[in-house]
Length: 253
Picture 1 (cartoon, rainbow, N blue to C red):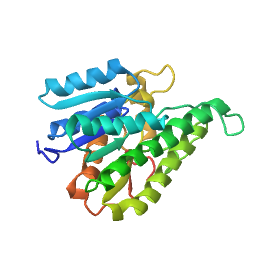
Picture 2 (tube, rainbow, N blue to C red):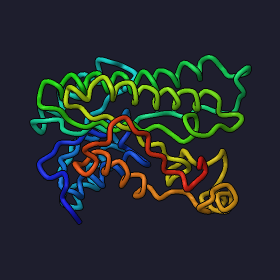
Picture 3 (cartoon, one colour):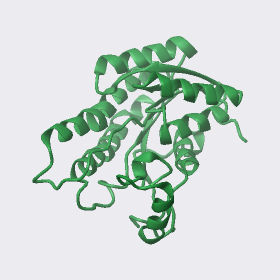
Picture 4 (cartoon, rainbow, N blue to C red):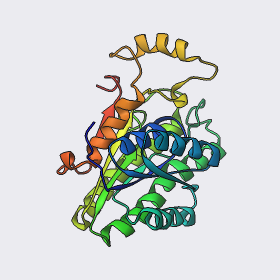
């Protein structure tokens, strides 16, 4: 294993479970000091324990990205704990589906915007404010193939929110590369997380379904999505600015 992130401090939101946890573990395995954040103390503590059991260094800070003051405190606490903020991964997000545009519940619409769009903006603003005053850094936003790259019926609000994340990423990347802050996005398709399960669906049933729905014939492993994030955050991607890297087995090809 390489150590591309030795002596780097990485912040990952939504890191208590799923892809966020996999991303945090991957950074720690490559030498980073990782701050994991989310709304559940219990799941964050589990992520920290997994990192420490593997010999890594991590700390948990609870925060709700829908609250700007929470995110400002999160960045402040990250620097307080580890002395820097070199990389931020804005992964926190929620899913609401099951309705068409005309019938989409407004409370679900607002919840999606608050967390998936405004939450990313809150995070990015706090992160950039620190990074541009301290020599720069890299930010990776987690979007989705649904919305920016492919559309399906019945997932209206989620698709709109993730399309906004992709657009936000590209616009912010142009705004802040001159500040030394390099911003990109990763857009996973169905991946190794509970969010890719349909209501009542088992993992085995999902495996069968994906044989038909994905050209690759399977979901993406969480480690495959994490590898894409680490690439964009690394010096290997030093000239990659404002891209949206799709990891979906060819669904949107």
